Image (tube, rainbow over all chains, first blue to last red; front, side):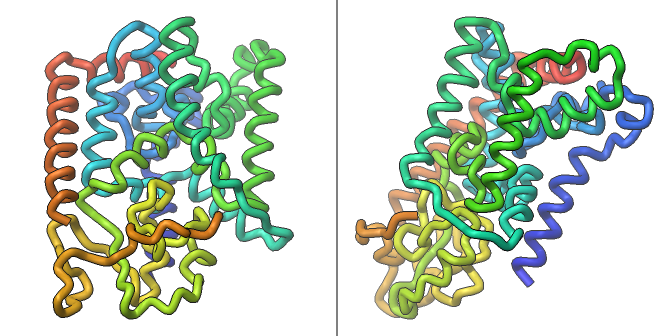
Length: 287
Length: 38
């Protein structure tokens, strides 16, 4: 039931922020008040049907114009401090697409652990540093979600934009294809290795209001939680992992549950008021 | 867990201050303009 609920939320996270259908029919870009709101999702605001703004695009724009993006960072920080990376796991349209692509039956691989550091580099270099020094929105120029939901539709719908297609467009297509094809063999490669929004949300996983709790007394270390995890982690080794998307798929196991920072004994284990021992275990398997 | 609760309170407070300061500086309108002019 929880898994189906997540799929429904992912569907809503894809459809609702892109409900301006008129944008595809006319074609025009929505310019109403909602466009001032940054969604906590990786959803391109240049998509013809987009109702809201992309927080990463907004941060990058502020960096490129030499300003500090208090509002965009604040919006993301408020959501991150409440639910951690939960919007990545339950609402993000690009994450949903990667989840669906991984369902294709073929040989499956694993992303190396060091790849997760790349998303922090993408955030620092492509979203803040390069735009700040060059004034050019380089992350948006290369963003695969932008190519999929804005670049391709606009090139298809508008003859004047089609005339602007140059070599950079094909580079963008190549990046999009790289992430889409790798999503078939690796779980969520973009979220784990390249998403700057996920990088910001990751910083809040340890201190967010909602937390994942693990019960060491009932856990048999069977590893099934890793098999169903959309980012290939072992929540029993580190429930506060920065990689965890808080999708709650693993809570199908009775040894894992959603709790809050205020709940000191989520499994009601007698004599244990300090939570699980998860963080004392440092030998988590790779993946 | 108490440390984590304190960390949550501090980050939530800092986040709310950031958001409020951004709204006070009318950044909502700047984001709206940027999003609408893409």
